[in-house]
Amino acid sequence: MSHPPAVDTLDLDETGWLLDGDSGVPVPGHRLHAHFAEHLAPPSWATDIFVYVHGWQTPPASAVRAAARLLTLAQGSFAAAPERYPALTAQGYDPWCVVVRWPSSSRVTPAGYRRIRDRAHAMGARDGRGHAAHILGRFLGYLDSERADPTAPPLLANRDGQYLHLIGHSFGCRFLCEAVQWAAEARLDDTLGWSESVQPTNHPFTADSMLLFQMAARRDAFLSLFPHVLPSEAHGGAPLRGPVVATYSRHDRATGFWHLRAEQQPGIGHSGVGPAPAPLFSTRLLSPYERYPISSLDHRFVNVDASDVYVRGRRLNPAGAHSDHVRLESAHLLLTLADYSR
Image (cartoon, rainbow, N blue to C red; front, side, top):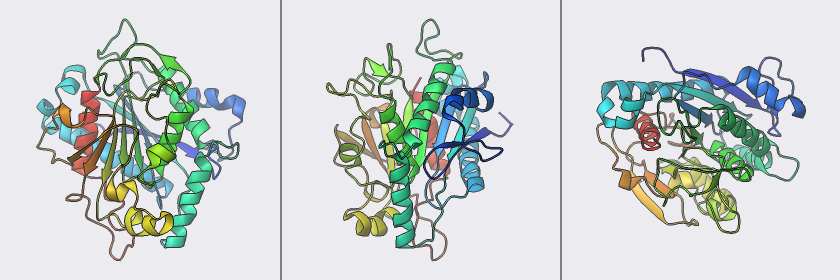
């Protein structure tokens, strides 16, 4: 593919409600589905649909640039060595991305970090005041109903299917996890791709992978905040076919130094997920010249140590390497998850 990746946007206000991208006016509740159909219908040519939610201190234009850059790096990696992604090579790979944008700017201070942390929590909280989980859940449900589902007979996993991947950065990871929980009511039947140790036999509407870059949440978030991301006998299921993959780096000061002071423990982006409601597997972020064995990713939770790669931050930026995820190595991990989802 020589063309740049196609990127569209979905905008939320400070409560998490959907805004019309042209006018900035809130979309009425009864118009949500129509708005999605008019502005964000999955293109028929797309093989892979990516929903990217940005993190702290990211202006709207920067969010689009980051997602576009990440997918451009992925395209380059795929074109340079298609043999590393055999399923993508066999079935084709043509991505479409929706960037979810939300008001994440504040002063680059501990107080500013806490302010956006509290806003992200309030936007995603399912208490009647925060709407992000509802809106993203409705949007993911819309995509799931409109895409050509690769697991639905008679298509199975062929080039007519469209795979849905969730990508979050920083506080954006929290929105995705809240949306996955919100959507845990609708159910589907067959599954393909990941082994039964990763995907449930019966599950709600699904995404095929979830990649969380430098997540800004407590290390025990999947016990305390997002307990229904995985299937359970009590809850019945979870809308995720593939693993929860989270990167971390000891050079991430935003989720290390600042998060430690705000919540008395470092964040996932600094130290990885743990403890969790299922066994954790740990691996390292590989170079684009190394192929991930499926045994390193075919688990419910995967911690990916990016400390040797995510090292850069702007000069004197107290957040450290918190936003250093737009890398070729990250694109390779993204592509690998898409490849193993088939």
